[in-house]
Length: 333
Image (cartoon, one colour):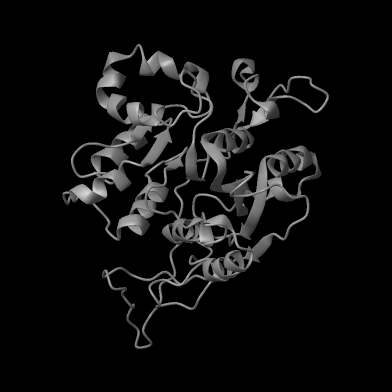
C-alpha cells in the first residue's frame, strides 16, 4: 500500500520545526503507529507515556492530540500500546481520511465502531469548522506521512476535491493518493495552522505537478522543503522524499504576501546505510553511545539529539524562523 513508518529522527525534526505548544490541537491524518502524535505529546509534556498513568494536569494536553488511519489493524496496535493515553481514553480513530463523505456510515450507524471510537470522535467533532460536516476542521498542527502508492479512481471521492478536477474544470479519472492528502490536510487546519507532510520528491519538480504546487501556494505560505536522505525509508522503499512545511494564510498569524523567502535544506546524513540498517553513534572505543534515556543514538543531521549530535537542519530552521518572525516562534505573539 505504499505505507512506510516514519523514522523517529524524521518525526523529531518535524516536531521541533513546527514547535507545538500546550493548548494547541494536533492531528496525524495517516497515523500508522502514531509516531507523530506520540512525539508531539513528548514535546508538550516531557514524558513518553507508555503504561504509566497520566497525571491529571497533563491529560488535557494528551486529549488535544489525534490520529486517524484507514487500516484497522494498525489503529488497534497503536491503541493497544497505550501510546496516546494511560487510561484507555484515546483519540486514535479508524476512519478513511480521504473518504470523509462516508464517515457517518461508521460514526452514526455502526454500533461496534461507536463503542470503540465514539468518545474520541466526539472530541474530534468539537473541532469541526461547521457543525454537521466532516470536511473542515480547526487544527493548529498537522503532521503526516501519507501513503504514496496507488491512485484514487472513484469519481464519488474525486468530486469532493478541487485537485480531483483538471484546470479546465473536467474531472480527473484518477489522482495520486498523496495529492488528495495535501488538499485534505489543508482542510484540517484552521487559518494560521501549520503542517509538515512527507511527499515523493517528484511532486516538487515534475512539470506535470505544477498545478499542485500552485494550489499549495494559494492556500498557505510554504515555510520549508527538506530533502530527506535516499536511505531514509529503506529497506521498504528507496523513493526519494522531501518534507513540505506550510502555514495556512491568516490575517493575523500568517498574512498573505506574494513574495517571501523559503527555507531549503538537504539531509546528507540519513542515519541508515544502503541496506536500510540504522547507523548508530559510537563512543570511540567500539561501543555504541546511549542517550539520557538509555537509547542508542542514530547518526544523522536532521536535529541535535539531546546535545549528543551537532546542531542540524531543525536548529538552522528555528534560527531562520525566529529571524523571519514566524508566528509559532515568537513573531506576532
